[in-house]
Image (cartoon, rainbow, N blue to C red; front, top):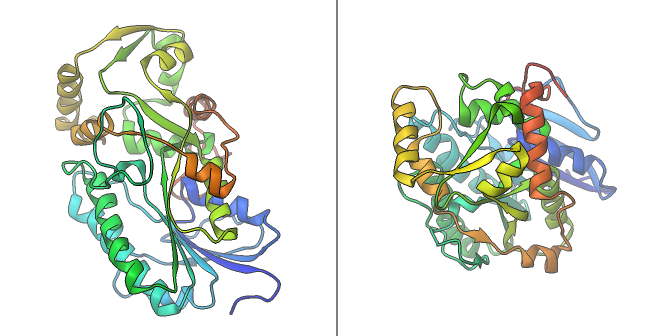
Length: 342
């Protein structure tokens, strides 16, 4: 049962990029008494106030309600990016697993559910202005990641009126970077054939400028802090999370001390599709299609209602990621393991 001295929080997907930062943030929160981290593989690393349990949301036999009973809030972060070539596998974990989490929250009588949605849930829009949380969330249907995030938005649309006693928060962060996530993100999106040393500026003399390839980012610790704030304030609904400035070819060229070369979108996509077809990269051309169509987000609601402002710029977050790639950085959890641990 919940401790009388503070809150008990359960976090699914607690060993990943956002999960590890959230556990560290909750450990510093005086209003939190204990945290239960759920993951398929229990790590050697344990931050203060945290205990672990092995649980796979994709398996029907997993009794999630057992882990949720007595919790003051469940933060649902569990997500599987790969295998992108097997969308049925990611659907089982990401969509069916999330539905099990939502149902277990209701069955266990947990009063607060925080769900990690994404900028990827948003419908396409030209990048000529930022969208607030009212923009449609139908994703880019050809990309599995966007389909799954959008489907869960519709699921929560039905879940909330059916469970009015549960305060539901949807976080929609931009791309989240930190040094310790570098090895995982290189494996997930660039693949095993891209050595981390290629992130060195002197090895990238040119940066391709592809129309529409402009995106937002934020430091994972800032995203974790926003998540923690939703637990201590009686807010509900969606919150956009991103830092300034948006990342484009000019920003990347300055980071790498490189020159910008204009590349037609069709040529860039064809090159990625060829690499995908040869199994040289794990990121699909459909995901590229989605990224160039993602809208820019207005984060005024997080600022006004949560009192949240990112402590790192998007450039600082990206610089950390690149530094981590060069060093093979990681953490002693299965998803974040690197050639060294930070």
